[in-house]
Length: 155
Ligand code: NI
Image 1 (tube, rainbow, N blue to C red):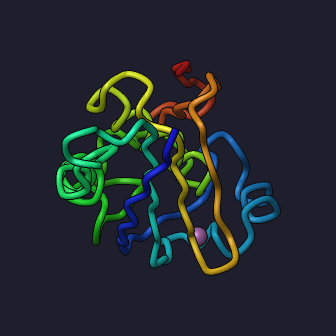
Image 2 (image 1 turned 45 degrees about the vertical axis):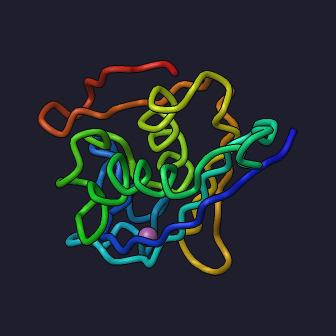
């Protein structure tokens, strides 16, 4: 098995808060990331695909095709956006780097042949990053309209 990675960059704003928390608890849990009108990050996204190199092309995947897919499915949706408000597939999700990994996986997985997607890695800064390998986990969506009520989706 060979693992092939495409790296992309995007810039976006977000605010970390839970609508069911008090202002004090949001401040205590999320600190500077709870800033009312958000703040920005220069993110790096790495998408790793696995497979056996094709006998005729030597490719596991055509990286131009993978780049175009990542651009269409993720980068075009999140670059220069506010992740709390502008991105339908992130609606209600606390946009931590952990949750972004899971949400991006969900967007990409069904666009690639089964089993091809291996890892989503998101850097929020030089020092902070998260990895997701697709194990089923619960991704909670909080309703902005009705704090205290939320839907749960499971991947
Ligand atoms: Ni932040």
